[in-house]
Each structure stands twice: as structure tokens, then as C-alpha cells.
Amino acid sequence: MADAAELVQRLELGVQEIMSSDGWRRYLAAQARFHQYSAGNVLLILVQRPDASQVAGYTTWQGLGRQVRKGEKGIAILAPVFPRRDTATQQDAGGGEEQLAQDSGEGQGTRSPIRFRVAHVFDVSQTEGEQLLEPPIHRLEGDSSEARWLLERLFEVARDEGLKVEMAATDTGQANGFYRPLTQEIHVARGLAPDQQAKTLAHEIAHHLLQHGRGRDPGRHAEEAEAEGVAFVVCSRFGLDTSQYSFGYVGAWASRGKEGIATVKAVSTTIQRTASGLIDRLEPTQIREEDSAARRRPAASHVSGGTDR
Ligand SMILES: [Zn+2]
View (cartoon, rainbow, N blue to C red):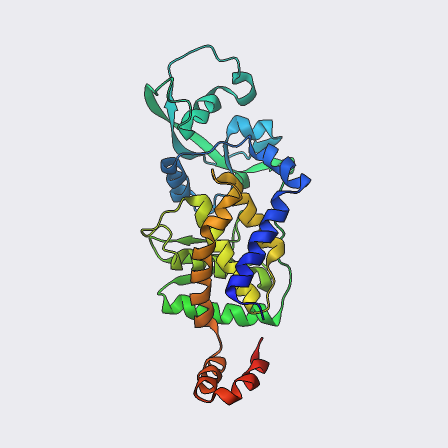
């Protein structure tokens, strides 16, 4: 059976392959229309809407063929306001959004903001209309015995960690789950297939084990690559292959960071270490006992190979 190191390598290759495809390039072109928000605004967005997945201003959504639904409340962020100047590029993005574009901190060498104002953005789940170009991230639809076993064991680990896990109904149909570091809560969408639920629970527990939002801050894109990488390695180790979801997901977040594909390499040691720790805790006790029995009696060590699952 593949060990954590081999599985991390499989993840790296899989993500690399997906990110070099034609479909991926088209996806990136669509993504380029979304702004990179500053760390402060990412925090503001997540506080108000922890399950936000894709956020943009009203006019950007219109440009993508989608309308904000009537009655949806905007997510408040802070937008820097710059001194007026000739703006030939504005027609593409719309007035307010041109200012938000500066939010990434780029271009501040020439101009500095004169003040900040509150602007409102909306999550994709608050909009409707044309289908967005999606990365190849396919939800798992299976109901395998491996997933049911993993779910049970992951619940135990979560309980040991003092986490509250809620199988919540989501109104959005978008987010599979989320982790709130402040309240030590995990939500997993109830409507998902067991394979996906197990994968999502592993992902949210990984956020916790990786101390995201509790002292370690490698940046949101690296956090997501780390958590999903751990989920992939752990699930695969116990016979649940999540590559149809995990590779695209890791790729999507890696491509949002400055390092791109190199993000995956940069976080691979962290993934391997965290996944190995979680695998040890999930391992059925009888395997652990047989392992230690095998260590005591080296001659019998080959016999325990049959307990792989
Ligand atoms: Zn996550």
C-alpha cells in the first residue's frame, strides 16, 4: 500500500497534470476577472460569510452573465479610493471595481489611496445566471464502506480535539463545509454523498490540525492546498480515492497564489507530516497492536501484511 510520501508525490503529479491542460487555461482566463483581495478584506469576507467561495462586486458578476439575487445582503469590505485620473480602462470593470482592483496593493508606487470607503461584494451563491467556467473539481458521489468507516473514525478524532462537528443543511448548495477556528466548529453539508462527507470532514479537521486561523498563517491559498492535500493523502491511505475532487481543488487554490504550481511543492512536507500524524490516529487499533506484536517477534512480521485496508 502507498505510504504518505508516495501519496504526496501522486498529489503533486496529479495537480501538475491538471494545471497544464487546455481546460485549465480557459478556467484561469475566467478567474483573471476576479480580484485578489487583501488579507484584511479576505478576513472581513470570511467573518461575514465563512462559506464564501467566489466573491466579486455587482458589476463584475453582471459582466460574467450573473445577477445578484433580489434581497441578497452584500458583504462589506474596505475599498481604497484613489485620486481621480484618466481611466481609459474603466469601461471593462465598472467604476467601483476599478478602485477595488487597486486593493491588491499593486500600483501603489504611483498613487496612494486618499481614503477608504465601504464597498459591497457578493458571493457566487448569492447570484444566479450563466454557469461559471468551473475548474475540474468533481464532487464525490459514492457511498463506500471506506468512507463510512473514515467518517466514524474522523468524528472520534474531532471529538478528541474538542471540535464540534455539525452536519448542517446549507442554503447555498455551494460550500461542502467549513471550519471556524474561533469557536472550534466544523460544518459539513448534510446533503453530500458519504464519500464527499468523509473527504470534507478530513479537510476541515486538517485546517484545525494545521493551526489555520490559530497562529499559523501561510496565506489562504496555501492553507487550502495544505488542508486538501492532507485530506487526499489520508482518504487515499484508507482506500477512498479523492483525486477527482482534490487535484482540481488544490490546483485552483495554487493558481490563486503568487507561486502557482510551486505552492504544492512548498507545502508538501507540511502535508506529509500532518497526514502521517492523522493516519496514525485513524489506524484501527488491531493493526497497531499487530504492528507492535510484529516488532516484538520480527519473524512474524510478514503475517500482519494481510490487515491492509
Ligand atoms: Zn478549506
